[in-house]
Image (cartoon, rainbow, N blue to C red; front, side, top):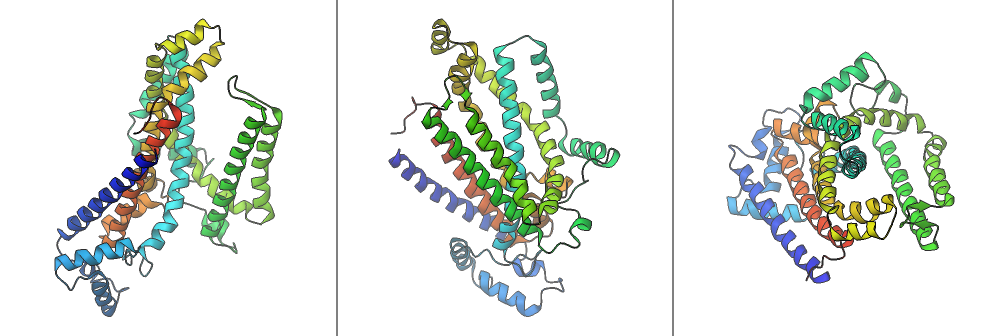
Length: 388
């Protein structure tokens, strides 16, 4: 396994090198250069444009510009964003990427759980009303036109009912007298959520090693459940204690509608894939043997059929996380969510080439990492798979 990971690391380096090279020459094929894109922008003085030319090597031949570009990329110097002048590209991406990651990872986790649960259920008991209802509704939502569906969600739940905010990241009226910035509150929310996830995993791990958690029968002792519940309840208490509770709640309210929209339009893919994979797995000999042993139906379904049916589902899940990097431009644009998707779209429209190139490098890097994660998960989920 170690040798395989080393070889894959070498392939990733080569592929990333090709991505950076291709992106550079595609941008160079456009008329003009980085500095002339904003030649009419009064916010960027003429002397600053000359400094930009020198930093990117735009006053040198093309091959020297390429060498300067590779050096800047390897050192993390993506230049200054014209659309967010004078902020560096790396600073803009570092600010927007966590917002996109939280939004789309949350939606992906919810849609995966709902889709896998429904797919497992309709495959195990075919022909019932649950199968027809879930399949028809899921396929209808999956094929819906995303911008129109997102606008319909906004019209129903935000405009007509008034339950949720219409869009954006926060409510300016609530934040008008706040003593902290939105980035500070959001970072604190991320840290508390990460601490809770680590605590939950450690609790389940310790409970499993101590015998309280029996995965064979899917039984869990009361103590781990109580501890995880207390950990979840401690998060809003910590927010309230630090004085940012109402600010964090405002951000959460703005996340509900886009997460719900993403979940409704994407759970069907996981559901149908799980259903098809389960139907294939249920015909395997080891599932029939488990039934012949007299094991409970729930154990046969979850331990023997569902776990092995996870392989293609996990592949689809991890690959779908790639779209969380670019932020699904449509969703972020419709809901005015200030993430990497909306930032990338605005950068393309404004011809903010440094920001575009920096975003492409990060998208390529995370895409390559996703492929490696899939390979590692395959070994964990199916012990029969070995990499030589």
